[in-house]
Structures are given as structure tokens and as C-alpha cells.
Amino acid sequence: MTPRGVPYFEVHGKADSSLPPVLFCSGLGGSARYWEPQIEAFAAHRQVVVYDQRGTGRSPGPLPDAYTLRHMAQDALQVLDAVGAAKADIVGHALGGLIGLDIAHAWPDRVNKLVVINGWAALSPHTARCFDVRLELLSSGGWSSYVRAQPLFLYPSWWMDRHPERLAAEEGHALTHPPAKADLLSRISALRAFEPNPLLADIAAETLVVASEDDLLAPYDGAAALARGLTGADFSLFPRGGHAVNVTEPERFNAEVLDFLAR
Image (cartoon, rainbow, N blue to C red; front, top):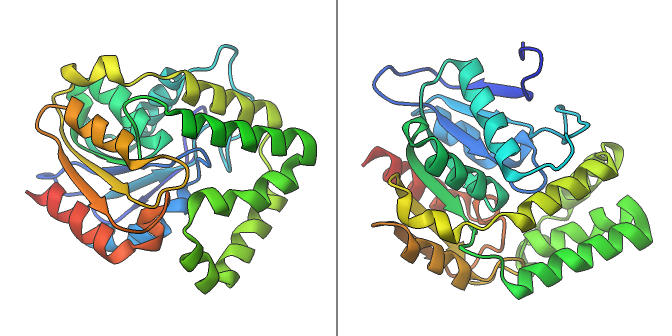
């Protein structure tokens, strides 16, 4: 049972005293369900922790005033504390990768290795435009319009065409489990305000940056700049996969990340 005041979390696999757990941090959606293509594969080797970020899913708000990415980082550490983990390997997607960067900078002793998926060193004008469009959809069309457009920013067209049932299921779940609008707006504002660039030179955690050439939301140039700004980071560029590359190309993604964590 999740302790009171801690975001909802799940633990999969068995603890190994010689290896830290793997904490998966989702992107803007914030849901533990996002990592379904990874949980079984990683839990076969490691203890896996997934959680619903505060203000999403089974971790309802309201969020505090002047909400920042630092609040999100502290929530992730609360989850690790509840699991009894002094440190973890952190795998973060987009916003989740920024959370991992903030933890690695502010609490370096809590991070063993870090994986950032389709993140950035600085928010690009293109990504800012995408968020502006999504906010306009939310304002003018409501939650339904926001949800129906969301796959366009996450997945490449070829993958969506091959998985209509999954898209319908995701849409149905999202429509019946809407977040509080104020919490969603606070989370987007916190994401847009966070600036990784000034932190990068001081982050010592061994890092793998993963990006997709066909990511519609976050151009891979931003991920490449992130890898260059970190000391000795590895950079893996997928030729396709979209923003949610761990979902659309899970076999290659799982193999590469497990290999990186095991090295």
C-alpha cells in the first residue's frame, strides 16, 4: 500500500542488494501505465519502480502554488524513500528525463545511472509551439480535443496506423480519467520554465541520451545538445519511433538501455 502523502507507485521484480532499482519517470502524462512495454523486460533483471506523478492518475492533486519541476523531483525521491532505495538508476521520458536531470544535479548521491529519452538542453521554439497548440486545443475544445490530438505528438504515423485498437483504448482511458485542468496547466508551466543547460556541466551521473529522428514534439537536435553538455554522455539516435520511442520500438529500446545499465 502506498504510504499517505506519497505518489501512487508499483514495484515489480525482485530486489538485488548488488544493484539499485530502476525508477521510471513518465513524461507529461505522468502515468505508470506508460511503461508497460518496459516493465516485464526490465523486471526480469532488476527491481522496477513506476509511479503516477502527483496531479495525474492515481496521485491526485491539488498541486501547490508556484509549482516547479523541483516539486516533481522531490516527489520522485519520496517514492524512492518509500521503497527504501538510497539511490536508483533513473529512466525518464521527456519531462521525466528533466526530473532525472534535476535529481542528478541537486541530489547526486541518489542517482546511479541516468537515461533521458527525447529530452532537451533547452526548450526549442518548435516544442514551445507544440505546447501552445495543445493549450489552445484544451482551451477551445476541452479535454476531449486535447486527448484526441495527443497521439499525433507521441507516435509516428506508421505506428498509429498499425495500432488502432491500442489508440482507442488509450483514448478511452484518458477521456474517463481526466486530470484537474489546473494541475495539467501547472505541470506544463513547470516543464516550460525548467532550463537544463546551466546544470549539465555539474552532473556527474553516467548518462545515456536516447532520441528519435522523427520526433514531432521534441527535435532530436535538442537531445544531441543535451548529450554534448553532459560529461561523457552516450547518445543513441533511433531513425524512427516518434516521441514515445520506448513504446513504438520497445525491443531495441529495452536491449540498449538494459545493456547501458549493466555495463
